[in-house]
Every structure is written in structure tokens, then in C-alpha cells.
Length: 232
Image (cartoon, rainbow, N blue to C red; front, top):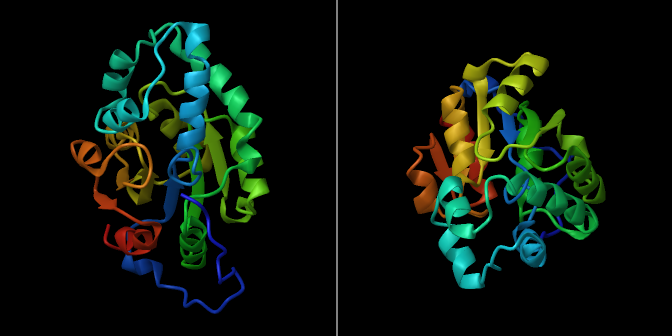
């Protein structure tokens, strides 16, 4: 997807909704595939590293198949060993850093961030990508103003440890948090730590794959986020 110019700004007169309409105070986003349109570039990088690490390249057909699988199923079928994976991720993040300031946000995501911020929600990012990459992307695309915090850490299958760290350091009430993500591990991890989740279908995993992990809500476009959060 490509980003479009956003016709509104934080200064425009959008009515501020009453937060009493929802139990949610903090909206935390995944990064890759949820905010940043990084999928195509990440696939290119992973394929570029295939010869170095000895796993097969993923064809477009294989990538489409992976979208229907869980994170563990993908690793099993990819040919990347569990012991190689941290090194593959480390190399991929370094290569992504060279390109990330040229990548664009998911179409219409900034409009939704503006709506959520004006509605009074605290916004954050929790991701397995590096904080350096996230900050570089946000600065390049003028999105840093919307986020109150960014937490990152190497998370191969789940983000539970990173969730607990974020909750503790930001003094959050887990009953009043919703996590927004595009991968099955996002939804699974949120559920494991007792956090509500919204699955988005515009990223990596398909809506069908995400639904198997029972998110609290599923949306197909950023414009649906505010209404989905209000419904929780």
C-alpha cells in the first residue's frame, strides 16, 4: 500500500469523544505491517539472506501461503532453523535500517492516529523491530508526534515479556489497554497477558488466520479503528 496526504491535522476541529464511552485508555500498536508498510521490503531482505543462511527463497505464492499460517508454522515450513532465527532477524533489521526512511505508512493510518489522539487515547508502539528503525521511520514520515512511548525487543514467537515490561514501566492498567496487530502472535500474546486485541487484515496474516486466535475485534481498514475501540 502507499500513503496518501492527510487532509486534517492535530489542529483541525474534530470533536473530542467522551472517553467514558469506552473502557480503553491506552492503544498500543504493532509496527511492521500495522503502521509501517514494510512487508514487501522485509520479504526482499529475507530472500536476500537466503543464500547466506542456507534456506530457500520464498516465492510470491509461498508468501501468500504463509499469510494463512501461525508464526510457528511459518518457521517450520521456511527452512530457517530455530537457532538461526535470531541471527536472521538481527541481519534483517540492520538491512531494513538502510531502507526504512524511504518506506511509507499504511494508507490512512495517520488519519486514524489523529482521530485517536484527539479522542484522548494514549498511543504507543510495541514491536519486535528495533527501536532505532521505528524512530527513524516515524521521524521520516512525521508520525512521532502521535506516540507517547515505543518499546521494542527480540520476540521470536510471542511478545508476553515485552508486554509486561511496557505495562510495568508505563504504569498501565492492563484492563484498559488494547493491542492492535497484524500477526497471529500479536493476538496470541495479548490474550496470554490479559490484554484486549484488535486484529487488522491489511498486514501480514490473513483475516482467517487471525480469527483462529480469537481477537476481541477484527478490522479491514484503519478507518474502522476508532469505532472498534469504542465497542470494547
